[in-house]
Length: 157
Image (cartoon, rainbow, N blue to C red):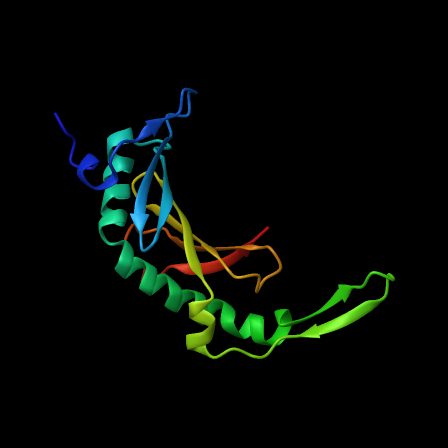
């Protein structure tokens, strides 16, 4: 019998370790996105159902997450990250100065790379940033499931 989340997530590969985590791969736009399911203190089915809910709303959540990235990180990029020193072959430093970005330009630089779901409420969307933040990860986190009204974007790494 097919479980409700399998219709959206497809096969879920379970970890052979005691963590009980699962991993699904879904199509999103023109690429494959990994969805990591970590039950934490909940039954696996609860976390898997939240993961399916996220996958079913992924286009809308991605749009919302990009707005959150712009609201939380655009100013930081334009004031602190667009200029940096680059080491030259002779060991000297050369300052690189990229142009300031508008909200629209900035939002287009991000591509969804992974989804993590933990328990019955934690959702994290991870983004590639086209090198804007020097190799750091950009993660949008919601502690209220698919309700992103209080979600935030942070740099990690």
